Structure formats: structure tokens, C-alpha cells
Length: 348
Image 1: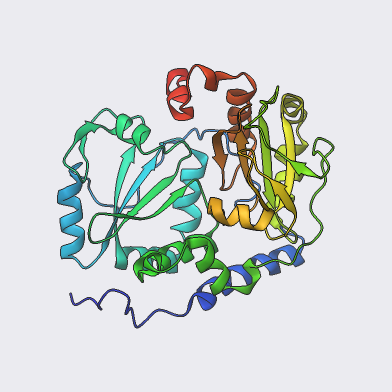
Image 2: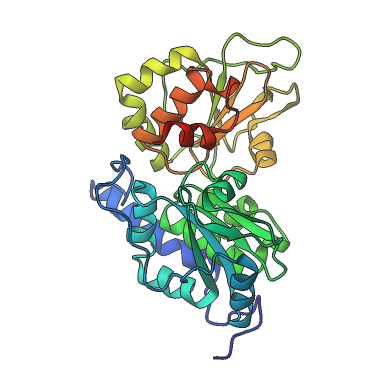
């Protein structure tokens, strides 16, 4: 099989054309009074274990060998970290890879090697180190499954996706790597450049009683706070934000947790003045850019001294958010700073 040179996939449509059908479909569904596929959805662990698509690679669990095989086929290597009963992993397989265009494009340009984050089989990483699947997942901080690590032809990381993303953003991620855009710009900038819908004018945000009003003086580097901080990065005209507020954030069990936090909401595209937890004077838009945020809503959690503990920057439902809030409100991070290791210790 002959492959087009990297960056010259002649059959590809421009990014805006790739994104537009998904966006129009979502808009049409909303106009018809329907919810977007997947959002909201029940994110509790599934009863039926996940089955990988038949076109996933049978893993050698020797990534140098997997990488060499991908290169020989003119493809990039992707390592998928998942769990058999993870609702978000099921959504990736059923919704994203269930779309014929996504499946076809993925199979043409990528070899995917699956890793079970609970697995005990040995893996050889790209540097030749040998460790278990579980330890590999812990090292790569795949706290939220599915996580996908995209590697370029040199074995360097081209893009990391932590968590589940809707089909239109997932399509963009595939093209971002396949056409080497990662060599020139961030994924955030790529999305904004490729589709004007991603660049929102500041607009009305969802309200919540636990959000603190401006000014946003979040500095904890000089005088520690008594409570951890959560910063909600949201945007106007944001269906995913609407779903978060109307679903998970509307549950009494979740709402009770926020009494243990200082909570702030920022518009990801606004020039709102902010002093960050580390004491830097900036704006909401500039800070979001520095953080590399491209998904709204994104929730960033900081400890009493302004150190970032965890971020949830992908689709999140009740079950996942409850676990995160339990971890931080209980101050489990003081004894176990790694959220994923804490989850492993609790075996859920």
C-alpha cells in the first residue's frame, strides 16, 4: 500500500469542513429539542466489559516494536489507556469510533495499541524500560480514561488526550497529529483557527450560588488559604457547560461538596483580570491559553498553597466528578498526591 507523504493527505478536507458536520448535527439536535449524543450520559461503570474494535492492534506490549510497525505502515502510533467498564471508554468506542468517517480516518493514519490501566502484563516503553501496564498508566498520569498518547515518527509525544471528547473535537485531534500541525501550533490554537465557532465572544455563563464574585484575587503563594480552590473555565453558548450545570452540578450530593472549596468561574475567552494562585497578574483568556485549555468546561483544582492538584478538562459526569471532589475535599492529596494511585488503592 502506498501512503501519501506526511502532511500531504490529499483526500483530507480542511479542518473547518471536518468540524462543521458534527457541529451542525449538534445544532440541529438542539434546535429539535434533543440533547447532544453522549452528553449527558450515565457515567457509572458499565456492567458489560468493553470489547476493543477488531482493527485495534494486537499489542506486542513492546512499544519500540509497535512504533516500528506503525512507521513501516506509514502511520503514527497511539497508545490507548482504558478500563473495561469505563463509561467514557465505551463512549469513545461506540460513539466516536462508531462514526464511519472517524473509524476510516483512524485506521488509515494510526496504529492503536491498547493498555489496561489495571493490567499486570509487562510493557516495554519507547525508551526500553520494562514495567507493568498499571505502573505505565500511573507514570503517564492517565487519571481519566480513556487517555490517548499520540507519538510522532521520532517517538516523541505529539498530543495527549485525557478523558473523553465529543466527535468533532476528536476528529480535529486526529487531523492535528496526522498532518503534523502539532509541530507548528498548540491544539487550542489549531481548534480556534480551524473553526470560528471555537472562538466565542464573551457571553452569559451559567450561574451557581457557590461561585465567588470578582475581583478574582486567587494568590495563595504568599498567604495560604484555609480551603482548596476550584476554577471553572467556561464559555458562553456552551452546550457542555449547560449540561454540567443542569446535570452533575444539580445533584445535592455534588452541591454539598462545594462548601469545602473556594469556587471561581472564569470565561475562557474573556479579558477578565485575574491574579492566579501562584500570584501572576493576567487575564482569564491569557491564563487559559498558558494552561493549554481547549475544552469548556474545564475544572482546575488547587491546594491551599496554590499548587495545581488536578484538572478535569474533558467530558465529566456525576460519578467521575464525585470521585474527584471526594479526593480533594477529604484532603487525601496530603497523603497521596497522585489521584490515580489513590484510585488504585481504593480499587474503584
